[in-house]
Image (cartoon, rainbow, N blue to C red; front, side):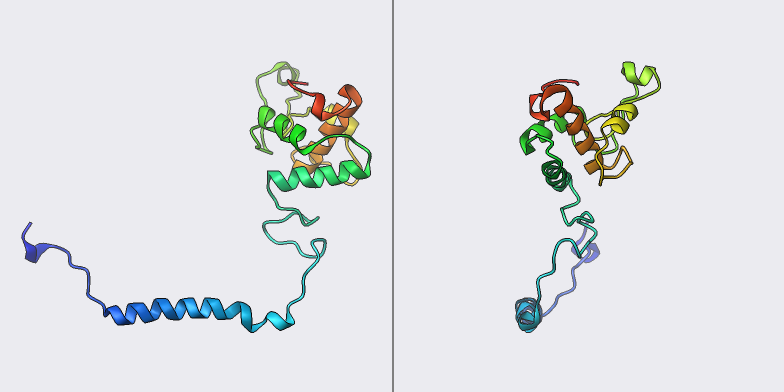
Length: 163
């Protein structure tokens, strides 16, 4: 390809580019200082953003586990973060919409669902007040499964395989 046919990037003034970058940086640095005197901390229970649960926890696996643990502590249901996390990773790889359509429960028409792969009858029997009645709700699923595991095995921490 000849030099005349090549696409050329338009030249811009280096000084203009430098000032634009520096100016943007200065504006970003100045923003936190401008309103700092009037800032007030919001309580997690009153502020819900797209990235948090209504209780103020992060809307991700870590937050779901921590919110479940808080509810479990109130209801005297034993379990630890590590025990819950280990079982979630084995059962659903952290997918709250996971569903098992091939095992013996599924063959009976009651597939295992959610983070801890709970079947509907078990979820209903071990549902914990104050959580959603939706089996796919991460906090409700974790809390019900931990309640079941506590009654059957002493704690979710004692579950090291399918339960």
